Image (cartoon, rainbow over all chains, first blue to last red):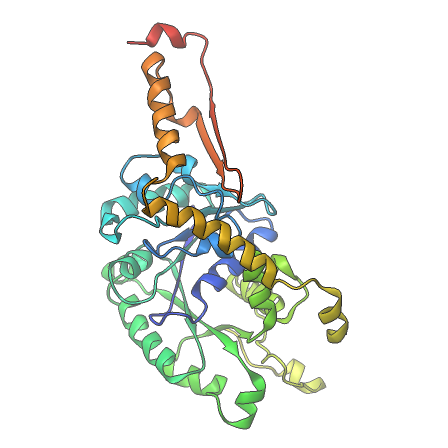
Length: 271
Length: 88
């Protein structure tokens, strides 16, 4: 039985889709069988970021409405053979996502994949709540910026109340992924520091993704950044995040920060 | 090292531009008069075939590739040995 991850944030434009694609690809590059599911019905973009936009035949809504089989709607990545995409519908309304339909699809995916990554739409409406409903693990994507932190706090509240885990009295495993982090601006004091965000949201840190041209380049060519340039700073940060997700104890380093010999050994503790 | 990488790589913006042009051309067509021609063809082909034989949904694979000049639609259907007998 695979694990279901929701990548969520409340706020738009913080890097949910980029992170879903990068984390999904990184897990698949390690040999795991992964499916990334786009829940942003009406405004899909995961297909574009993963470079599969010309190959979409059926989508999540088609499967839920019984117009296509799940196997027909899944798009296999051309670069990593254990990576699959389930696109959202571009033309249908998000009301077509039924609670029962989503439950059936997630159940079937869990039985066939090691990881099911649900890319949540922005906001706290139906698409977002359904994306998080079946999650075992939540990755809260946050920018070091006041409105993003506030929205993340709101989403954490929903994760603890509106999910199946919460309703069953279980605890949702939550991780913070800090994206678009600019160490220079943080150093100048113009950006919230990592510790500030951690203190406010008080969930464990999964990784810090630096603000980088490599992320933009990767989306331009339609490739998750971990595939586009494996040696780039954001790719390394995503690979490390995946290792932590799988339980490895790996200290989180702040991108661009010079660490001395001791700093390397007494780095920030990961969750 | 970083400078070297900056100069050695082709720029990515032209790729982004081309991908968007193809994608948006198809999406605009889908909301306009010729609503999703490829999607219509897909549905009608499957309907036509199912008149003559029972199609096992799991044995049907439909692939599309949308291009700037030409799009392709590939429908792969496994036809079982006794397919004809099941026809209505």
